[in-house]
Length: 504
Image (cartoon, rainbow, N blue to C red; front, side, top):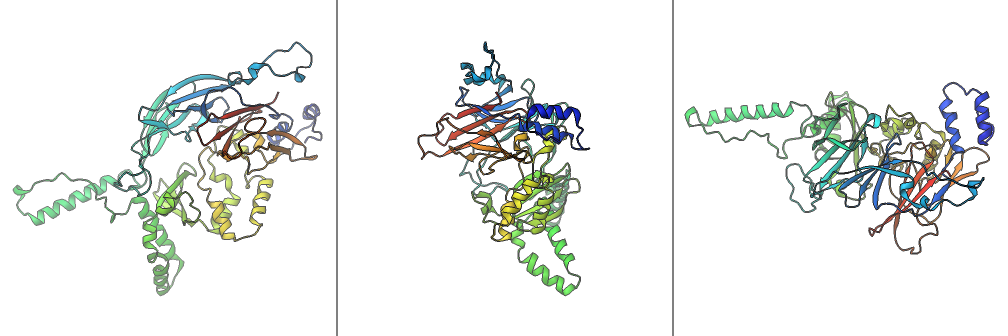
C-alpha cells in the first residue's frame, strides 16, 4: 500500500488509498517500521526482581521476588518530562529516566508461596480476556527420595505443587488447587476436570475397585465357605503393581497394535509383522513415560513419550521419542508418530500454527510469524533443511521443540518477519534465555532500501570487562507498544543489568 517510508507520507497515503480486502490490519502494522524502540536507557535503577513477561493485552508486567515468595505486578506507563527549549529531542533525558518507576508503576505485591514452598518462576498463564492469571508454587525438589507408586527413579521428587488463580486487576487470590487438568470458570474458580494417566474416564477407578472387591469376595467365599468366620482386611484399593498397565498406556498399546494389524490383510503376514514390530518392542512401549503434554484444542492433547533415561537426561536428542494425539472425550489415541516420522514433520511445516494454542480474544496474537504463515520464515526453514546432512536428523531436531510451551511466544510486531529481519540465534519471539553478546542486535527493514531500523543491546553500555563470566540474556517486548526490556544475568546470583528500550 505505502510507496514511501516517511511516516508523514504514509499517514497521507492512508487517507487517500484503500487497502486490498483482507489486508487492512497488515497495512496498519507497517507503521511499526517507523515507530520503533530506538532509544536505550542502560542499567536502570530497578528492584532486584525476576521479571517474567507482559500479559497479552499489555496491561501488566509480571515479576517475582528474588526469594521466590512474592508476586509483584506492575502497569506500564510512558516516561513524561517537560523541556523549556523548542527542540527537546536534542536534549538529554532527565535523571528520573534512569528510574524503573518512571516507566512502570507497582499495582500490588502478593505473597503466594508459604514458608516451605517456592514460586515456579517459569510458569505463568493468563486466562482468556486477561482477567485471571494462573501461577504455581511447589516444595523444594528432593533428588534422593525413594520411588513410590509410579514414580521414576532419577527424577527429582516434589511433594506438593499448588496452582493459584489470581485476579490480575487487584491481586486477589481466588482459588487454589493441587490437581492436573483444570478448567477456569468465569466466576474465578478452578474446577477439577480429570486426571489422565492411571485412569482415563471419571469412573474407571470406581469400576476397577468394584471389580477387585467382587473378586476378593468370591475368593474368600471359595477359601472359607463359613460366612461367620470371614474377617475383612479393609484393602479396597486397586492393585498398583507394575503388572497392571495404566489407562493411557493401555490406550496407546491398543492403537499401535490395531495399526499394525490393519497394515496386512494376509493372516500369516499379519502374524509375522506383529511379531517383528509389536511384540519384539512390546516392553519398550510399556516402559515409555510421558515427557511433556500440550493442548491442541479443547478435546485433544499432544503427548510426548520417551524412555526413562531420556526423561532424566539433560540432552534428550540421543534418546528415542514418540508423539501421540489423544482425544480426552473419547479417551482414545488417534495418531502416533516417532520423532523421525516425515509425515509428522510435513504436518508441522504446513500447519505450524495449529501447534500453538493462541488466544481467541487478542487480535495481535494472530500475527505471530511462523513458517506456515510467513514466506520469510519458510525460506529460512528450508535453508536450514537444504544445508546438508541427514534429513532424518533434521526432522528429529525440529521435533525436539514439540510440544510447544503454552503462551511461549511474544506477539510484538517487532518480531513480525514480514516487517523486520534479525538474527534468530540472538533473539526471537520464543520466550527463552539466550547466551548474551556484547554486540547490539540489529533489526533491519524487510523492504527496500533495507535500512537499519533499531538496535537492542543487553548489558552495560560499555560492554562487560570480564569476558570469562558466562552471561545470559532475556528480552521482554510489550505486545504492541515500542517498549522492551533486556535483562542480562550471570550464573553467580549477581544483580541483573536491566535496560529499557523505547521510542523517545
